[in-house]
Length: 488
Image (tube, rainbow, N blue to C red; front, side, top):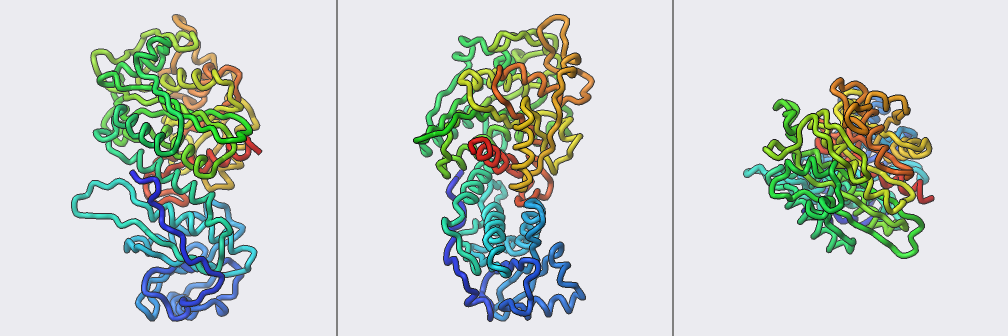
């Protein structure tokens, strides 16, 4: 796992020298809508392709084309609508880059054509998409070796800071995807914790591991109930801290880190157990966000809490009808052992709230009902403050990670009333479970402003927005956008 594996951005130029006759290699031409094609260097190749395919110029916005140049290089041409949403721009750029990256080049040229004022955001988006899709991800194919993109040559635009913000986002996203894609025999709670320790040392983060013995002393019964299914008592709540100089405020990030979820005694069928090594994605997103914030030296204090465990079958694993006592004293009736995410988050949120952060943001692949509601192309957010939900929706629109805000009305608590404990963990009906899960978790954040992100878009077949892999890293860019809005 190399968090510094992004391509080097080199030779940023305002001119298009060398592109007229073509380069031996791979070129993406990004044409901002409204630009005169005839005035663009090398556009005669594009115009010839459009004529052959009987395409109108405006069709380039949805259907990029490729052609070979005189030097034998492969070129892709895209018309980019500067007024389109960030998601649509990213998706169009990914589609245009795909045939170039499929040849696994070590270098790529990006040329941005059009009005000078519109070039910088277009170049930023193009480089971001190239970084995300040119990085190396885990692969276990014995006869296939992926080659990472090593250099990006940018033409027609210069960045004053080398696109520092989007580079940090791309590194954070890559880290989240790299961790999530590891198979469950390689990423166990123990090995995951070891990776986090190494990462913390490399990045200068403070770290504290609350292992099972410490959590027993704290009487964190909700987390420990699930941890009984983790072998060799390797589960833990890991606390990372980032404290820059002149930090404006302190925020808490919480991530669900279930390295594999069988469903426990309420065993999932094979169809729904497949890919359950992804269930630690929330913790990977929190780590990716922490990495991005560190790279950018974001002037906020961050406390990151990772709930790392497994939900397995074993003689010791928790069962239906148990009553357990959470860290904050709340007694919980266990209704379904496959609702383990809200159990490990309950105690972790309580720990995060003790420091009275300005806000808590948690990331979790929490409920199937959110995936039913939205599919895999958007995620849902729920909050105990309207301004937090609005900030998340606005940040999602800006960064291209779309979210929908759901209400969390108090009367839904009626479904969680228990005859034997303070609260039911969930219901067996499954209706509105994403709202019920939020109502349950809200009991553990005390008075802290709290935003819950249910990551239904953590995996999307064929990619999503800027990202071409099934694992999307969704939440890193969204989380940074929210933090920046909160910090002002």
